[in-house]
Image 1: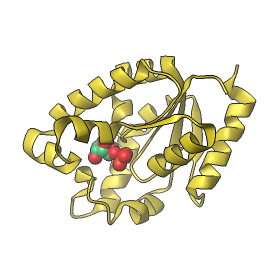
Image 2: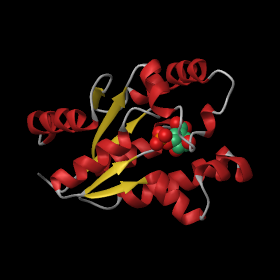
Image 3: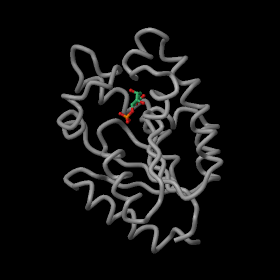
Length: 173
Ligand code: S3P
């Protein structure tokens, strides 16, 4: 394995965090969670940042974190679902390593996120409809990642296996 980063992007609830943690441990790489780093720096939960400082402030800090960790190596970088919306984020992450986008169908996404406290964007009356709408709006951005993995029906361990298989076939080109 080279020392390039492995970057996971994709919608909320597609399994990025668990998959990134397992992948980092299997490959002896460092796990970096961009959301965790934002919370650590701001000393505030994602929910509170959205509530008290607003989404655009969150996106600004997120962008700084992406730039910082893109300059490191040997990391599995677990990105929040909106990282893809900024083309500079994608350019920097792409230069730093292999970008994988994880997918899942809306019903499975809902099942995975419904009890989660840190998805302020889904605190709405009809979260499934919101998931469908955001997925549709963001599809073109997620499709910019070089590698695409559908995790519907896959456990995080199986997703790790799929990513490693792709890296073995394509990753060193
Ligand atoms: C967001 C996804 C979240 C978190 C924030 C915004 C988004 O991360 O960054 O709530 O815009 O899709 P996860 O994808 O890890 O849930």
